[in-house]
Image (cartoon, rainbow, N blue to C red; front, side, top):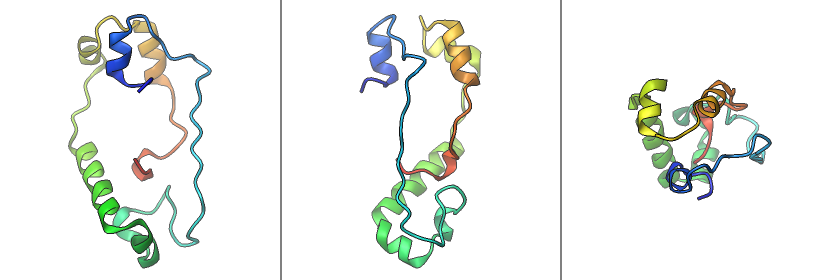
Length: 106
């Protein structure tokens, strides 16, 4: 909840520290599939069973929504998130993600 856009808008002036880090730990459970390279439909049978059809369907839904989503321009984002420091927004948009966002579990 501390990182939700709604929470940040409610607490005007709240900013995420520049040294903020999220650690995500993955367990290697399969030598055939990779969370960075394997498409959902290409997972091996063991992984599909281990993950479960319900979770796989959630991943498919998330992937479909992200694929269909029309991401706003920086100008539109500024309209949608009023009172956000433009310099902070620019730095955030320029930050390179250190993982392949197509292949992660939500």
